[in-house]
Image (cartoon, rainbow, N blue to C red; front, side, top):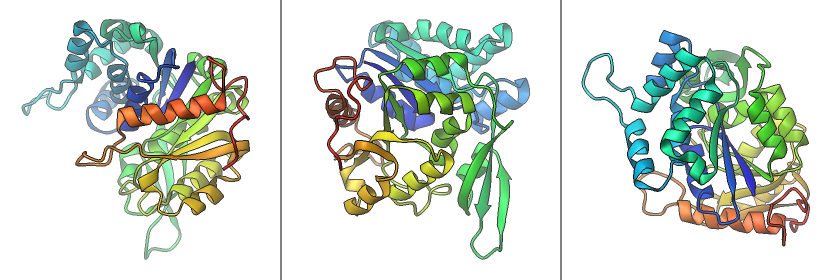
Length: 335
């Protein structure tokens, strides 16, 4: 199967790690948001005017080869400088990507260069930006006790807002998509959306017209992976079905073939089934599986459990078809 995963940050890293453990998955392409403006990425973006490299670096590390060279280089690109100087907090991989971007000006080429260093092609893995230019997230937010709505700007501001996010959009509006990312979505057997910061890592992919159109028109199976818990700030108090409602609000024409959620994260399964009804294609299904890492100090997906759940979804979407969901994507029993 050729699988494309859309997202950013730790959510996308979890998805890519799980996909590597799915026997039916042959090619993995990560399409990564480029709107981060915090930390090392934000500093490099402001100083050099480049794509924020942090989420791209994390995706590359998730797809690194399992041999000694892959582990060595993956560990190095993830290493952050300590101290209090100019380099403090920067990840080595961020600086490496920034240097390649500044020298060559081509983000796809830069990602391929670092990908070869990490051995990503050995895992049939590739990382692409959703756009070739840095983007900015803006949001309409309602604050408790304050009338009306307010506009805030920037990924960090949206993620940390004490208000309720109503909608987000990108600046510049309707940016051009990365052509290679569009092609990957159109040629995929399955496309995964989520998990991750809903408003700042997941929804932005639907706000890039070329990428959104490819997602709507692809023959691939479209699968939404829900978060384990609401995130403080942007999705505080959200139920699983509220995540789907917001997703539909930002892409009303989107229909998916499966929604996968952690069993322990869904307190009202009937509510999630009802909330997913309008988002699912005829024959689509909500899947509940134990995919959380029960021993983790903070909520995170268990890679093996998520891999097993995805394998079940892939198998049901395309029984007997080794390439995945493109041929028999409506074969799933209704929820």
